Amino acid sequence: QGQLAESGGGSVQAGGSLRLSCTISGFAYRNGCMGWFRQAPGKEREGVASIYDDVTTTYANSVKGRFTISKDSTKNTLYLQMTNLKPEDTAMYYCAKDPPGGFPHNRCDRLDYLGEYGFSGQGTQVTVSS
Image (cartoon, rainbow, N blue to C red; front, side, top):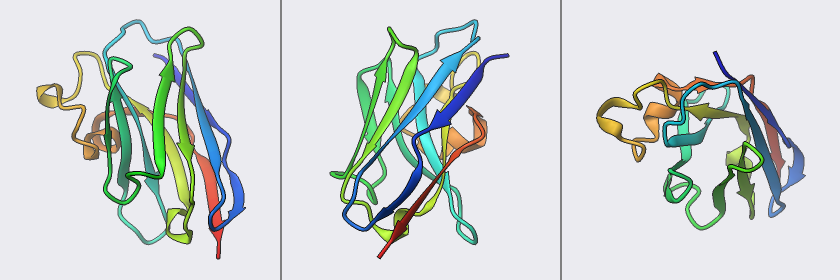
């Protein structure tokens, strides 16, 4: 069983930026889909962004134009660059990887699959103050 370790969270003011990192280790398979989802107290889990085969990206409407997902396979690391942060972005952020065989119907654009079917780490907290 592999491991995912998130880092880079913190507290910022609205309009600020953060870059989250997720170190990937120990997975015996190299399926193509990884991403980020978030969970805030009292709110539903929300898929934020995904990347397939290190190239094809999908974003939630709530973060489109502000967040950028990327993956450096040479460093086994997934990133989420977050800019123009808003108080509503406050949440625990989790990195996720698809299971062996991929997500159902290989749908990496289904951001809800990240939290429902993917392996995830312990999360990193992002807090944005107004």
